[in-house]
Image (cartoon, rainbow, N blue to C red; front, side):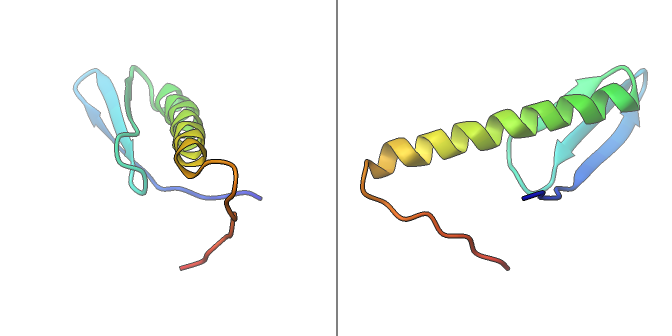
Length: 70
């Protein structure tokens, strides 16, 4: 399943800075806009994986996984 997130980006002097709107803590800084978007993708994947593993560890072995839409 493909999910879409919002990258909020801007150039600040010689750097490009950006955040993923929907996931606190996912932010990056790179020299080019293209590098920034790639870094945001990598960082977002890592954050989502970490959050999933953290949730699974907190729940233990007996849990249900359900998708919700808003």
